[in-house]
Amino acid sequence: MTTNWLAPAKINLFLHITGRRSDGYHTLQTVYQFVNLCDVLQFELREDNEIHLKSDFDEVPPEDNLVVRAARALQSHAGGRSGINITLTKNIPTGGGLGGGSSDAATTLVALNEFWRMGLSIKELAEIGVTVSADVPVFVYGQSSWAEGIGDKLTPVAPVEPWYLIVNPGVQISTEALFNVPELTRNTSPITIRDFMDGRSTNVFESIAMARYPQVRKAFEFLAVNNRERRAKMSGTGSCVYTAFETEDKAQALFEKVPSDMTGYVVQGRNASPLYDFAG
Image (cartoon, rainbow, N blue to C red):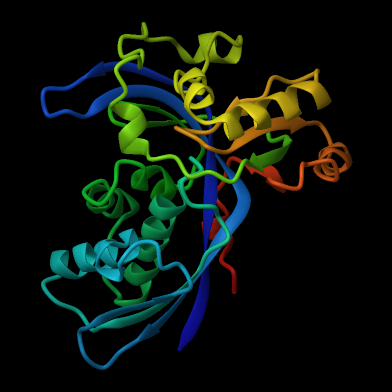
């Protein structure tokens, strides 16, 4: 039996770095919200215990892909299970700050928990997921969240669910590289959810990305000029930049003007993950 499962993108509504731990991990504050731009994964049981991944995404060797790492982590936790064939169809741009790899890993954990009839709780799956990538737990829980720690301490929140135009400027940004730039602000004072709701937040990576990548600056300028009512923001460490609209029609109208050297996506904010809608 083969079934399709969705792996949604996320955007960060803000992102502050509040410190750095002795193990090198940065502590942060952010709000994750899902959008209905999704990768699609198909799963088919094997008779042996091997894990095979098929994808048109060849920028990462299969053994390093977070999907394979998630499947192996779950298989190891179970003490050995039957194998699985996984087909991954990528729609979320890589290196754009939209969390596609972590979302794919989370969907793999949730789906294989069903396929292998493991009966693990969402909490248990999230605990396995954080060993794969710090962003995996929010995708497993499937609820828009206020996040702290390394992104794994989650409090459900329910921000408004507007329409967004996400602009991909066509450049991939290494998260690891941006976290290691010397000018990164690593001591932002912690804020409260109320501070965020009142607009007292930013993304500390925006100025760094714009200084290093002219394409990102161009995307910001395009959105700033064409939607003066809402501030353009960058998701995560970039490179994707987005702005919000009250209606799909308004987002679609600006989508039609996206420069030819960029890619646009008209999507809706979702506080409940499309993962749990199931693709069918």
